[in-house]
Length: 193
Image 1 (tube, one colour):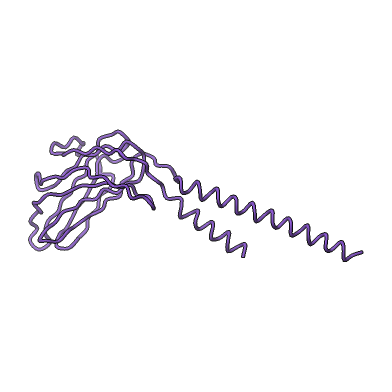
Image 2 (cartoon, one colour):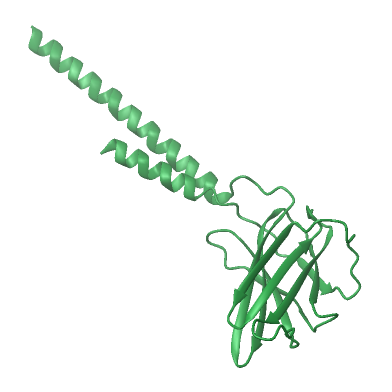
C-alpha cells in the first residue's frame, strides 16, 4: 500500500510540474508593417486543415523574450479553390497551464496581402497559446499556436505545493516504518526472554 501511495504521489507531482504562466498583461496591435527580419526563422510554424480551410500559422521572432515585440502571421485559404479567407480574424492569448482560465483578446484583424498579422508583447516568461478565431459559411473556426516566451519556470505553484506534499508523505512513511521496526524489535526482545 505504501508503494502505491508513493507511486500515486510521484504521478501527481509529475503532472503538477506544468508551468504556470502569470502574465496578465499582453499588448496587441495590428502588424500591417512587419518589423521582423524576413531572414529570421519562425519560432513556431504550423500547417493544418480545419473544415474547408488550409491554415498556416507562424510566430516571429525565433526566440521571443518578455517585453520584446513579436508577430503572429496567419494564412487561411479554402481547400477546394485556394481562395484566401477574407473576413476578420480575432487573436486571443491564454496561458498554457493546467488549471488556468485566464484569456485575453489581443486584437481583431482584417486581411492584408492575403494574410493576417497580429503583433504582441508579453511581459512575463511563460508558456502560452495564441488562438486565431474566425467564422466562414456560418461555421466557427479556431486554431491554436503554442508559444514559449523567454525561459518559463520548470514548475509552477502547483508543482511546489505537490512537491511539499510528496516530501511530507515520504517523511511520514519513513517515520511509520521506524516505529514499526522499534515495535517489532521490542516484541522480539520480549519473546526472547
